[in-house]
Image (cartoon, rainbow, N blue to C red; front, side, top):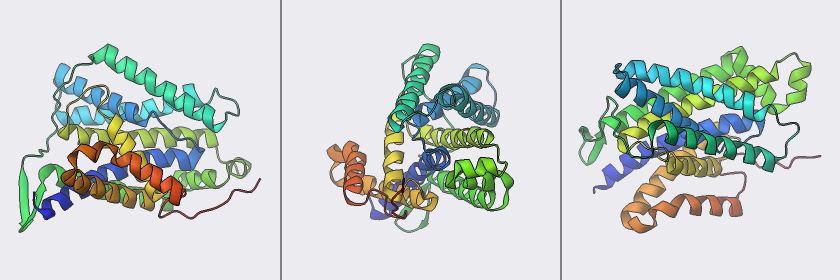
Length: 291
């Protein structure tokens, strides 16, 4: 495989990991919760699109809109029914809660759609390719990933900088109690953050479904790699997570090409090394919380 194609494919997968890492970081920055159910939430939303497309026979774009609406609702419901009832939970308690949500969603998906693998097609193909520069082959799917990533990142920049909800999310992230005193309804902020995060996760899962087979566990590995990207870039840095995703995609692609048998453990190695060497991530400021 040419180096140019390895580079493009690695950047495309890295963009997916970066986007999915954003879904993790938005929740963590707003409410200090690492959402281990993010993969299953995205998977379930993708199955909703599959159901609307394959069972009801609606066009893909209708299925896409329904899936995103469902993802937003699912994020709000997870926050309302799983996180809010917990009174002053510990970090371990929050992790257990999200793992419980993860197991519930995986079980519901297996019950509703079965555990067998299904083919799910989106209007972009990995097999259709272009060669704008000799040696650099870009697939239609990779092009769609890059465009989607640019649109989402641009939207997030303007959202956090110029909207009231974006400002409220940043204020809540910095100091939840001070935000409450200033009149910000933090419960609404948390609900919006979970819904927004779930939508980004669903978009990423729909893109990834073009390269894999749809089953209840198809988002487990992408979540692990996205989490590795978030750890690598810094869980408190949105630009860092995107850069971490791109680095993670390149490492995985080149490493997997040279040593295919070791590709599945790349994410674990990255997580362990970063936590040992620089726990705050490569692009986040290291700080010590005073109590």
